[in-house]
Length: 248
Image (tube, rainbow, N blue to C red):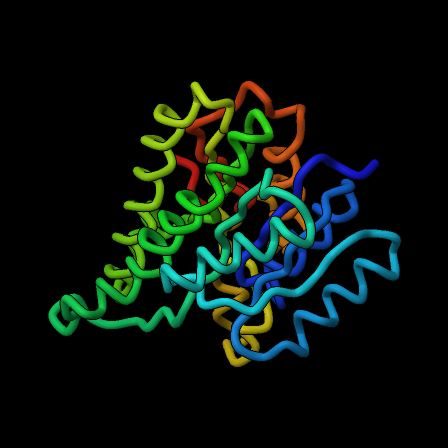
């Protein structure tokens, strides 16, 4: 059944974002598939959704640019309806660097995607959510703050900041009927990991209590739950989806 409003998934042309977009469309949401810069992958996601009976359109935008985000939300609202479900998923490069080599710019590069971009998107989408009487914001976090993996300090710090945003927004936006939650995937191999050696994947898998690597669809399932009416009384939460890898 078609939903009221639309779902916007940033960075949805491939990887986790593509799976999330497909799952939300299967649940009846008209989905805005955000991409940058190549439209080919995004259009394939859209075509697949439409072939399966869903509604989707591709929207090109740099979600770290304030004017571009405002224009994106305006375009999505005009073509698919107000954004009822916002999934800030887009990310950038995640270089591994020893702590002594990490510059302030390295930190800013990560904060750009995990603090600035979600903030811009929330601010632009919120008026539409208020018109709808509520909405869902589902951030895509990471297990990295718990893993404290050497070389990933800038990324881990930004992801920890993203969780703080989630909890604070949950308190502030709750009275408006907007829930805010975060899904923290483990290492889910996608296209960007194609060059990772098989032994590294196997080393990670051995420490997963469920004995296997996760899949993008398993992340999408949890996002879809948080976007659903079934999660109407869930907010300010962080759900880790990694087969138990970071259990205490």
